[in-house]
Length: 143
Image (cartoon, rainbow, N blue to C red):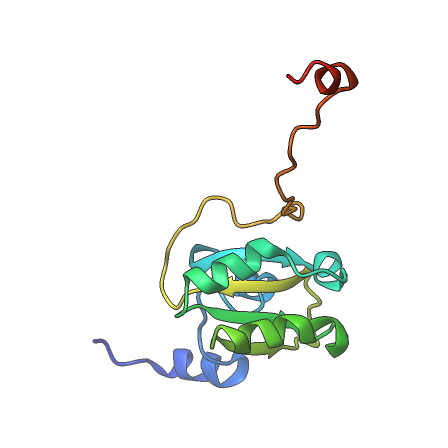
């Protein structure tokens, strides 16, 4: 390992330690894209219902970490905080004063998983199976 020179030490002292993919980390609440399981935008987190896809991924990945956007009201985040504690997941509320991301929730691992589709576009509805209704004539003729 090479020894840092004076210039590198000064740069780190002024700007902080070097960070990989800083723009990506700002966007995804402190983590990078390759570690993400699922993402919700702020508008989706603000909805009254919990996304069942997020709950399913929390149950399937007990070692995952939940990141929530701290620039949002806590009352909108609390349902996901409760869900994380239900599945015994660690969670972090990330507040970045310099950058307000449009991302509201990130469920990520501590290592790269490179999942191709991370954005949830809509809520999956759990509809109970309905029995096929018999028509008028089938009732009359016992079919």
